[in-house]
Length: 189
Picture 1: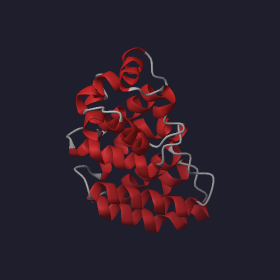
Picture 2: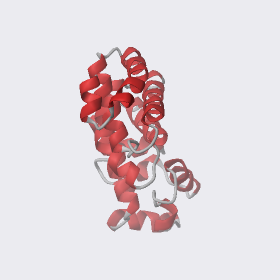
Picture 3: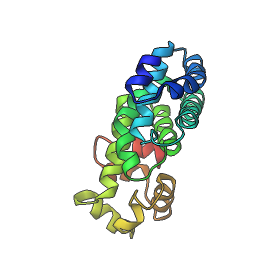
Picture 4: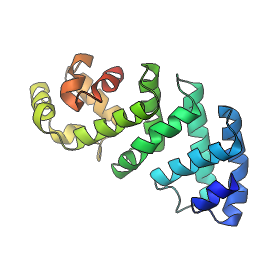
């Protein structure tokens, strides 16, 4: 665990202060300590959480992952795989760790787990951030603009609320975010 944390850029004192939360994550996920450290540090890097209070961010990441795993049809390993795809894009658009984990939990409850859940979130964010083609057409049919669904200025919850308020249904998901992300997005709608 200390090796993975060190490789991720943790200083010695940060490794020592992060180990208790890493151990809690390992226990929550039934993982060995090294795997828990690898997952948590990757999520921290993906969400650009390495610059501040690393111990507090490790606690946050551990708590969020454990909560998502214990309240949905996924586990810590699958969340780690999902976040490896989704975290950099979600972070770039200001989608929080908590909201990303919540979306992945919803996808997982619909049977879209692990890397597929991460790709679903990544592709949904990307498609909504730059709506063209079928996405733009469906938004126009719903009376919405690109700004209404832009993840850079709207949370995913706000986007879903706006889409539902405009009458979007699960059957509109593929038109909105594409064939690959559509099934998971349908679960959110």
